Length: 620
Image (cartoon, rainbow, N blue to C red; front, side, top):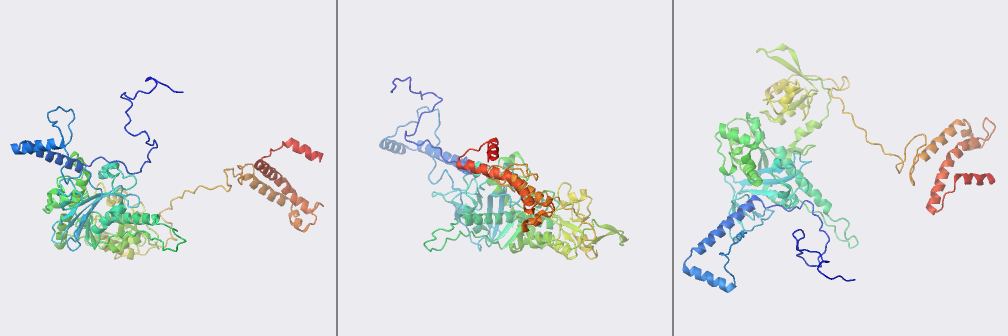
């Protein structure tokens, strides 16, 4: 049956139904959705380069229009040769964007590749991370920025295939020369975290490479150099955790059991090299050791203090006028530019802290990465600190220190320490925390990383009103000791009592019992009286009830159950076997009926009514 006429065919000329642009044989199957590979909008760097290329192209056109007659004749001859028409005089509602100049690519590469200086040429590297959370074990790295410096303090210059930020020049081949920093975005493969934390959205990171792809770049930047960061436990913890994740992923993707019959050696998983810096310098810990009176320990706040108090000169491209707090001016800066600007603050701050340490004003927090280990959150802390939190406690906690009977010459009252007291060390101390922790552990005290109401004292040199362990200890009426007072009090520590003599002041946290699994294979009830009925094919409570009834029947028969094995008669004069099996017959009757019904249903037969079966038994 055929149909003719234009009225039967659908009208595709309307505005609601777009016209088909593909071939008729194109498959209508939907494309598979790619997870975490969303199309990202052009970055601000790309837009700015596009605008610059448009301005350069427009200036080239203006130059050609203002050229002499010879140039005009040549342009006209060229247009006539290629068969083009002049459309400049025709009105156009839509302005066509100018074409980019040669050597300027619109789509920048997502992975940085370049020629980095060697360790001898640039022994210092400054690293700044953008992460999705606060703990390395539960969060991911989404971007990092790095800069290199020579031994004289000058910036190392290198080349690469993409700019570090907007404004870096490129040559005709698309290679960027004169780079002084690297900014690399990383696709975490999961939720990148809150946007206000680092400035990157899911669209920005959707087309970025994974960490396994950029791991060689980060290894070349860090291995063998002196790493300068703001927060050693946080920064180095995230770096090592990402390398471990990448190695575990490579081990899972390695082929297993392939080519067994050909006797070929199995392919080993790809080895991802982990960088080992020469040493790690923490500018935030150095500010604590030098007793910086700043309540905000963020990088820009610490840098502003050194610039004001010690005449530290900050570079202009580090954006020193941008503060650490949120502002409209800070929000207008692209995330890559702000991350690289923060990185450029690290080396001048390190040089100023080193100068003050040489003058005797505090110490510089520099450690060997070999003495660091990860705690339960993935933060890289010293081995002394991590082992102190898990060491056994041979003494019970007597509580907070009490005032002594004697007084010093200056009228101050001593506070006696007792073995087993729990102490907490705040970051706001001038002494190295490892020295304080080691001294307290040798004296018989117990160290805790977390402050709670069972803590006996807090070691700190400054009490901040709105942050820190000292503030929480003061609110909980826990005594505060300076580092000097704590070391002096360790000279006279009273003997403690074993944990068994006194009750532990820290009660055990009640443990929520795990849900109990049913013994039956199916969801049948587990009642002890045997009234529950399990589903088909499962060991429900019916058989369990029969077993209980069998036990009860055997127990009620008294000595009949014992004489059943020998076949002797019980006290009632009947055979013990009959009494013993009476409970079994009563208990097995229901189970035999159910099992018989299941066998009949499996074989396709129908179950006869119970009344008919009893009639047949009476006739027999």
